[in-house]
Length: 153
Image (cartoon, rainbow, N blue to C red; front, side, top):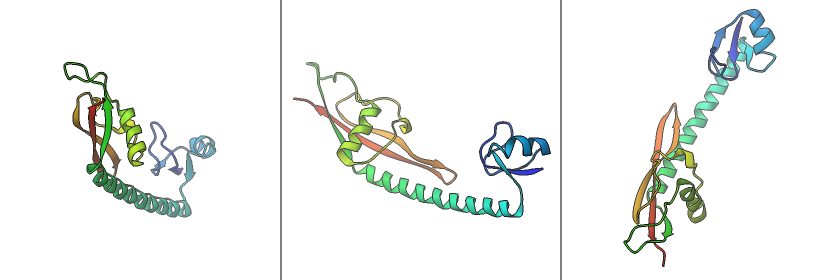
């Protein structure tokens, strides 16, 4: 029996794959659980339509990520930090605080887990942190978040 997978199935295939399985496995396990549909002409057309829609969606997401990367290049997130007598900063500015700062200061939502540079900002001045904005079949889009830390008075 040929089926089209509607979800990733471990040791079998990925979403959208057309595969050959035994009749019992397909009709008693995959299809009732919504993991697959029988491969027919209509389901093949539906799969082609869904793939085309997904390709358009991915292009749109990549374009939005490129626009966001260009916008981030010109923005700075400002933070104030306490400094010791030797000029060194107390503590660090974490990626969570950077994400909250971007949202509060510029209205841009980012995901703290997408930062490529995992180290926190822990020095006065400017720090540039790379962030992954898009990753998919179309390629990757990385942006740079500029963090400015100044002395709190």
